[in-house]
Length: 86
Image (cartoon, rainbow, N blue to C red; front, side):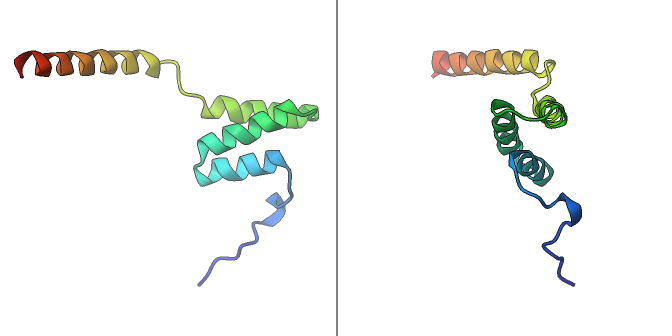
């Protein structure tokens, strides 16, 4: 059976609802963009808190940065070794 396009009371418009829809669909960069658009305007306190919470949920964890640096260094070493042996 086909699903309805109607999603209940989450309908509504606005950048915050669009950000939430994108986050639920898996589009994290789009959700972050829409949440920033909400914060650029003059949102209510509840909208500001929800947009900031959405931004904090989609941020890259701080523990991932050291792994990225190590991976970059290892990749550079492998390329240097390949060039030296080649």
